[in-house]
Amino acid sequence: MVTRQTGYILGLLGSILAVLINIFSILVGSFIEKIINNPYTTNFAIFYKYYLLIGGILTFVFAIIMLIASIKIKNQTTKTPSIILLVFSSLSLITGGGAGSILGIIGGIVGLTAKE
Image 1 (cartoon, rainbow, N blue to C red):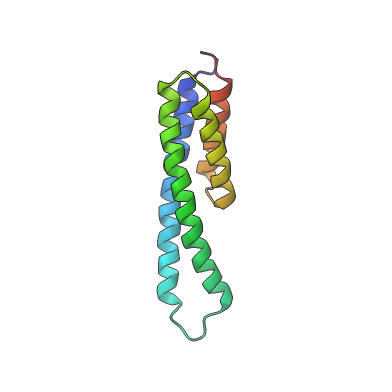
Image 2 (tube, rainbow, N blue to C red; image 1 turned 45 degrees about the vertical axis):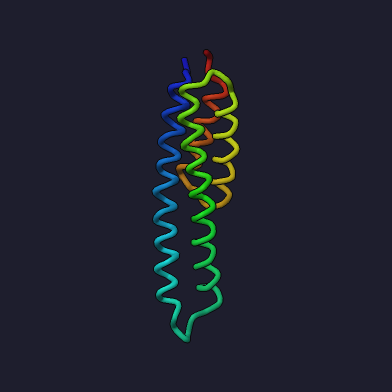
């Protein structure tokens, strides 16, 4: 039988993984910025740098909200934290959250369907 504890653990693991992925993404974006000061730089490299920086920052914010929602899943009896986790995990998946977002989506679904 699936409990809220399972949704809490999956959401927590997913949000921590998403935070780590996005810290790496932001670091890679800033490293590309150092390389870009080359006169032979293409427009794609400039676009990719901004994609990594802006996408990384957005997904980092989504991951922090996922982390807070997953902690609240354990403590509250309402379904609201599970819905918040599900929504922000989906947004994080769109902006590049990766495997952490998928774990967050699964954790949100488990939190919604878990018996009290």
